[in-house]
Image 1 (cartoon, rainbow, N blue to C red):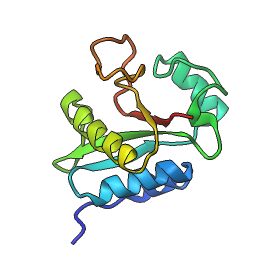
Image 2: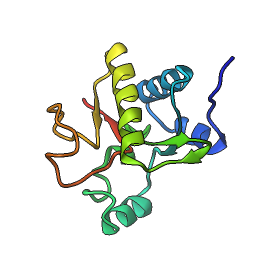
Image 3: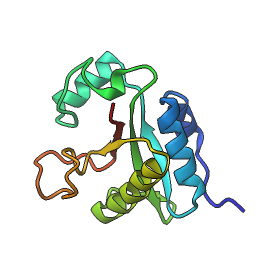
Image 4: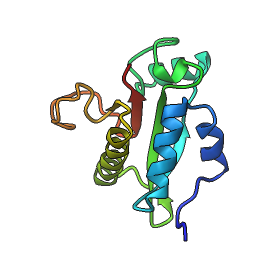
Length: 137
């Protein structure tokens, strides 16, 4: 019996992702280890520049992997106890799961909690985006 499933918003965002990211997200959710939502995939020019001006992104349009079609970046937020959680620990647990699925599928991913991919999460960077995952090409 599947415990977790994507809601309407997540399914819409899923459909805007590259095939590789769709595959990672689907398999990760099917593990039934942790529930999560896809809160962002493709971003248009206005939305991307709003994120930049608000400090939620370091790049303006069209320089984000969210700005490609299909999107090569996704923002995933954990659901814990039936509610969205921005808790750093929950985000790190989700990241471990997503990055593991990516490795298993031989899909290289970068996480916004470890931008330089050096294995030292969070502590060696200034900009934290713990819900962000992108393909490395």
